[in-house]
Amino acid sequence: MSFVDPEASAFGDLAKKVWYWPVIRGVLAIILGILAFAAPLTTVVTIAIVVGIWFIIDGIVAIVDAIRQRGSGGMAFHIIVGIVDLVFGLLLLFWPGKTLLVFVYLAGIWAIVLGVLEIIASIRSRKQNSGWIWGLAVGAIAIIFGIVVAVHPGFSLVTMTWIIGIFAVVFGIFWIIFGFMIRSAGKKASAGQLP
Image (cartoon, rainbow, N blue to C red):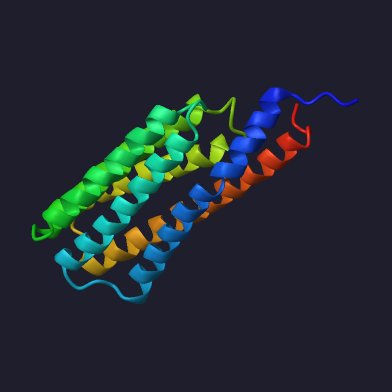
């Protein structure tokens, strides 16, 4: 008779329910990135609306994902990340007519805040989550992006769009990998293969 670890079994069940949320976030981010490369936006208003909608969707997905993972490490931080995304998205939707400089600084501030929160959440959940290093990497990339934007705010609109596109694609790839890592870890946990 084989012994089933209740913690491993619970993790396996949770992983089955949540692994696709990071994948959804990743796919949405990659779509935004592809759009940024395929059709560089010509006005601050347009880019603000498109990016604002994406941040609102990503924020909602992040909050839902965090709530579905309640009881695991870092839930509060993931909810904060989702709220930051929502607030930033709403600011862009309802304040789109401002200058490129304001938008650039908002993007930089958002990226730095998101990066710091992502790193904190990843470090806090490292014992429960074998893929925590991916969250750490996403956080570091977000901070670097935010610093670059803050130091060089005079980018042209097209260049800024491409930078957002690169960031969105990299962010999306990390989230997709992270989602499949959760799925794999959940299958191993269900099969009793995790230590």
